[in-house]
Image (cartoon, rainbow, N blue to C red; front, side, top):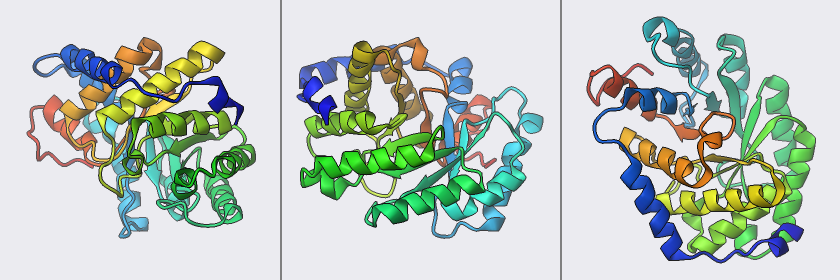
Length: 290
């Protein structure tokens, strides 16, 4: 856990407030279609319901396939994110090479199972075609201060994944202090995370602006020290364009233009894509394509 000795894990609340103030001030008044297009291309279009099955995930993929025909002004979404056993369905049906196949894994959403089971599940998802894996940091062990285990587990998983993209969910709604979010960010990064992500979307609160500010600041500090760019993924409760715009401008404010692409920035959402399409094409908030 050398990384935790290399970085200060305390958080200045005034600095967080100032970043938020700057980001909110940068949000344009009125619809900005170029920004909406850019944010649409950052979405990990997510379906993580207990009711998911071959039929509804196949339909989701078909809609993603025909998006360019229906709305040629819009880019494809960055990824489709589903449960592991449905990865094969997406692999078979999705035919947009610019949209990745992402799977949750490792005992999602609670991460309360054995490390070897997590590894096995992730390896099977990758064998089925997953190009990205979203795992949950073992929050219970983190809160118990068993940091060596947390680091070990993420490290083992990343080693077994190889070049497949690893997003580590901190479940920030369970971390009551901003300093804990910063500490978890560095721990995940040091253990091998390619992205750090706020939330599973299964607890409340999900993503919060304050958590994303703290995570972005940790990523910036790590970049300034090492030159390595780690990605950021707000997720959990992001369903309207104004919220998405705020997160976009937080990332721009702290990390800069170099992070404003799917390679470094994702937004995990299920309803946001429809809201952006509805606003972009003046079809109203209840527009339903996906």
